[in-house]
Length: 243
Length: 120
Image 1 (cartoon, rainbow over the protein chains, first blue to last red):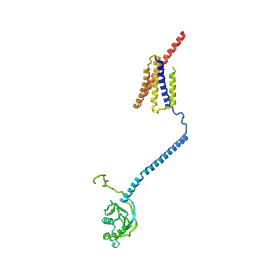
Image 2 (cartoon, rainbow over the protein chains, first blue to last red):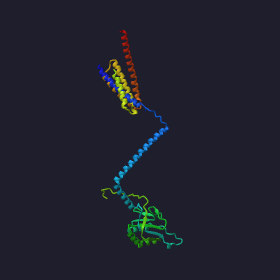
Image 3 (cartoon, each protein chain N blue to C red):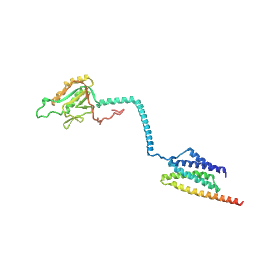
Image 4 (tube, rainbow over the protein chains, first blue to last red):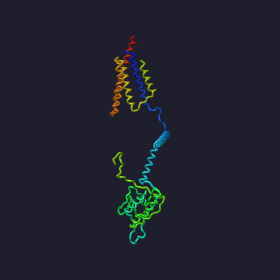
């Protein structure tokens, strides 16, 4: 038998065994030093680690802020345009408070018509209000609010159980103020003049209400529409659609 | 004759110096592989002393036993049965048998030599 080869084989095998034993030994071996720290030392160590953690978190946050800043810088132009458009649309839909030149109409009961034993007229019929709004719109009124209730495109004025309601808001008490805002002072003047000679006054008088019209005021504030606008039957037009 | 011992020491030194650590979960496999290697080694020594040593059997047995033991342990882990104990048992028994045989052979050789010396 080849003694050299045999020796080589055994050497190789023992080498491998030795290697394996060493690895196993190192794996099994527990940490050389026993952990002899008491609770306070452990707390200190924990505190140190926590500090490190918070430092790392701060670092992460600052980096994220920087990243966001870069992002926003990149997007700003687009975003600004979008925000502007959104504001515009909101104003058009009536979701913003508007201040501008306009007039104030007041609906009051006719004092002369008061008779003993007869209840005072206090319910303005919805038809009258609708006619008034139509007339105002005809005279280029831009923003209208009746009794603090903003009139928008989807507003309904109707009679519910003998109460006149504007989008769920009941008109109970007189006098009722109707605020009208138009685009500029000229138009406000025009509106004022037209309202003065309008038939609406007579119509209201028949129902024993007096409509008084204030002089044009450059600063009339119309409140924002405060309820959610429910869009039930509107759908966006599909691009390339036939409609 | 001393070369295998040098190999063993070199292997241990190499392992310790490189500082390789395997994950705790795999230490089972390594321990059983070490046992299989020992079994093969002592089997080889016995075969050599009995003059039935075959190089191919020895080397192939070394690797095959290691792989078999490791796969048995693996199977055991996945079946939820401590099958590696079977390997430990088998290798342990064979290890003792082999060592016993080696001891007897060496003893016989030693006594024979002593007798020869006494005769002469």
